[in-house]
Length: 134
Image 1 (cartoon, rainbow, N blue to C red):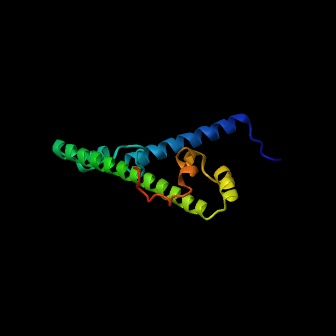
Image 2 (image 1 turned 45 degrees about the horizontal axis):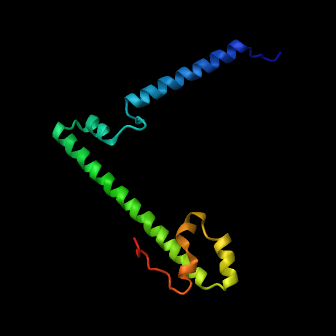
Image 3 (image 1 turned 30 degrees about the vertical axis):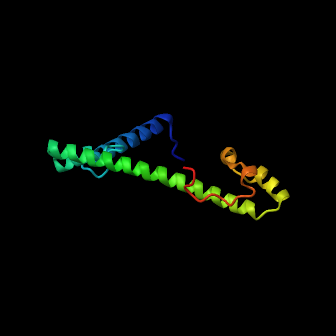
């Protein structure tokens, strides 16, 4: 005779699994096997290294300065990447016939760059070097 599971057995199994998972995760966080997601690094350093108020302040200032430099590097990189891409587009376009250039302008030029493109001004000119006009 096969053993049948009823609804109460299923409810009990789900509840037991949830309780075991809750207990395991609580212990993992308590004994620092898992870290709190999204916890700021300075707070974690403070908790684990027992920082003085002066150390905490210095570390915050260092982190703030580093974050600002990183943001500037990202901006510079995006600008240089865009300039390099547009320069490549100008070079590619210069190798094409006038008919191909029209199709290129229509089908291959990224929509975001069309406002900056101005092919009629560039037809007789070599492409601008990166950084020109910035």
